[in-house]
Amino acid sequence: MMEVRVLRYFLTVVREESITKAAEVLHITQPTLSRQLAQFEEEVGVRLFNRGTRKIVLTNEGLLLRRRAEEIVDLIDKTERELLEQDELVDGTVTIGAGELASAQILAELIKSTGDRFPLMRYEILTASADLTKERMDKGLTDIGLLLEPIDIEKYEFVRLKVKERWAVLLQADDPLAPQEYVRREELMDAPLIIPMRGNVQNELLNWFGPSLDRRNIVMTSSMSTNASVMVENGIGRAVIIEGGRPYPDRERLVCRPLFPELSATSVLAWKRGQPFCPAADKFIEHIKKTLV
Image (cartoon, rainbow, N blue to C red; front, side, top):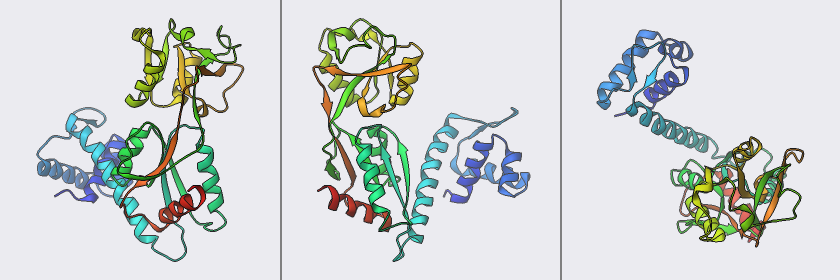
């Protein structure tokens, strides 16, 4: 049986890339830590480290364990916080996953408006795609998700937001299309394109472009518009993004122009149905319902 203590040892070694340094951080001796890790490898029946190099290198099995161990430890830490937060004075932490969307403004307003009633509440916001946020919600690592549709939300309670998420193209400031008020689909057919990574979203965009689009022109996919904008700035291609995902571009280097015909989407604030939440998350969900429903 895996012990959480040993998983924490393992993650510390991975982070420090050295058993000696990890032992110093953990305030135990190097032989003790080495023995614990050797026993752990024997228990799980696989080799986790490639030894003989100057720094720790994980095997494929070690890489898999690292991912799972991080999830397990995160969940345990979150659960311990929630147990400590069972108090009349709500001072817990609400964990939120959010895409780079215009509707993040509504999320900010909700957080701000809870401040007077619950001044001790804190928030953790992970900027991530809807798919990753849903995965974390299913594992109990994230309480609430701000998700761009289309997405399967059958297992969730949700509030659909009224903000229109408009698709646009991010261009270099000296791009021939930059002076235009909007960009037509035919004007994007013959140049390198960067599009979102999510499958459902790609389908929406490809339907908008139609069969004339040569998919070989799609040179990159990106999960976040922030990284896509860096690629645009460096001349990799033009990026199709949600307009609100890049609200403050440096207009001397980048401009954002809506697509024409217009293509838009909606977003939802969602949480898993039947999920037990800490008091802080319960209060925030209650606030969402009262404010938006």
